[in-house]
Image (cartoon, rainbow, N blue to C red; front, side, top):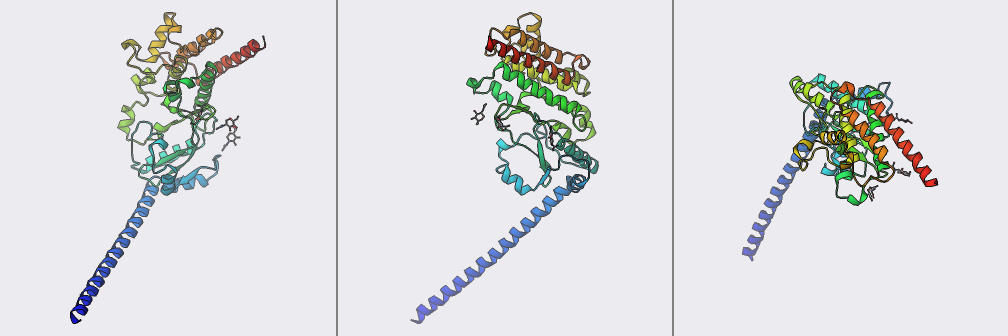
Length: 357
Ligand SMILES: *[C@@H]1O[C@H](CO)[C@@H](O)[C@H](O)[C@H]1NC(C)=O
Ligand SMILES: *[C@@H]1O[C@H](CO)[C@@H](O)[C@H](O)[C@H]1NC(C)=O
Ligand SMILES: *[C@@H]1O[C@H](CO)[C@@H](O)[C@H](O)[C@H]1NC(C)=O
């Protein structure tokens, strides 16, 4: 009996000690958790301050901004909305996959200025900037979601059965041109896109084009050396004049748009190593075909029919004008938009005439 009681006693002590020990562990882990949370909160606040949160709030409350819906998102809301930063919800990182922190106050002010400029963009063919999150090390911009993939997917993706008609392609070209013309001349300050390409053009459920990632490269703060050295853009679409001089103006976008138009007409990629060495750039491939009177070889056969060749030629000519060697010789985006719209309207009128006859 006494032996049993003793055993029981030991067990009690052991149990007591274990519970005590576990409680201490629990308390420690709670404290640690709390500390971690506090530290996280502190860090988020620190990032928010570093990224110009105070300045943004101040500027947003000031007068003169038309987009009052611009939102500042918390880090928590961002994580939730993007499904834990799921890849499919991330559009890009500052145009070039570059990550960069804002290092000083003047960069911060510049960044906030540019966010405010982008927040004022209001065009039916430009992806709308809804807000931003400044509680992360690298600030995040939040855009409206556009559901049906990129123009590149539509032209080169596996959905070959959903091939676009000439009317759709011309409409999309007009929409892109109109959006770029707006950015160049009607936005609150002129904005040069710098990276016009079919992967930066999104399509909504009605296949309406929305230009994305505009001016994103302007938003990468960097030191002066990089500014001089770094030419932004994508091989295949890059304006050769800008590439050679490093001097940027809106005609660089006109060049890239010309390549996009060639891509729409030909259904071919802007850069393709399966074509011969001289033809790997769509710009030169298309130009030599034009010059040698064999345009039909590069035009997507899926869009050609018995009564639209003249229009295809006209559109091809516009693409050639856009990709002239010097920027000065290229038309303004506004002129390009008007010309393409003229073509499109003529097409619709011709079509209704044909339908009637
Ligand atoms: C955007 O522009 C449209 C007209 O083009 C106008 O009705 C609308 O109020 C504008 N929205 C903002 C937020 O400025
Ligand atoms: C847009 O996407 C939806 C769902 O992904 C698809 O069902 C629809 O066919 C697409 N529309 C076009 C015009 O591609
Ligand atoms: C697509 O078109 C339909 C019919 O015109 C319209 O109701 C709908 O809002 C459009 N969708 C988008 C995303 O604009």
